[in-house]
Length: 266
Image (cartoon, rainbow, N blue to C red; front, top):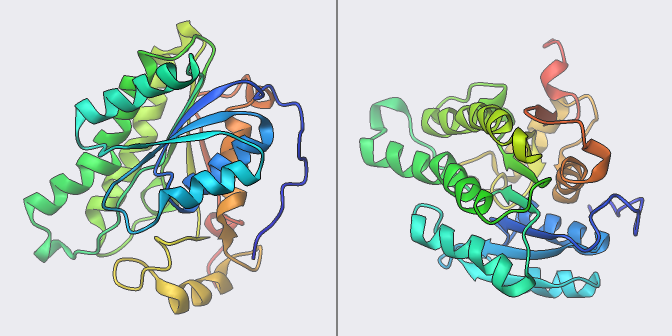
């Protein structure tokens, strides 16, 4: 199910801007690149070369929406590649205004089986990778820009058994954004974190490391909105957080979960 943008072409100050989006080969990242295209924002989309999803589909979707997108291969665990991604925005489009750190991995591992290598791999991508992305892009960004990191309701709000490394990383993302919101405020750069709830995406549909289709359908019964979210709904929240309508919002952790986190169990 896809929910179309209710305000195509709306003037939210995004026209003419340039955004770097990591994790853009699928899911929320791809939906965000399309949402930016509709707003007149050009994107440099970072994608992991070994990702099974084809980034050319993102490029095609952006073009169909009337936008322009440049894909750049990047492993956010490698600082030099992240630095090159940030520079690509300036070399391709002459500016950088927005950074969205959406690259992430999800692995299931109970504590007894959670090795140091597995822990460090998760944090290298899901937490340190966010820091690297913000660090590299801040050096290239114009003053008055905006940054958003994608956390998760798992870690940002809830604990999740067999996912201690993932939830720790996602909780850390929230603290990182708060600190950088203060540090970068003198430059007029706003930094916020988004914790999506249960969103139908390639990650959540993975039955090995996440809920899978059946688990997602069952979990949806606990959501007050009566359904799981869609990737374009999460993307439009990020677009809001990086547009003019959120010009006085920084250092915040926004949860978009259909009401799941505020429902009394029973």
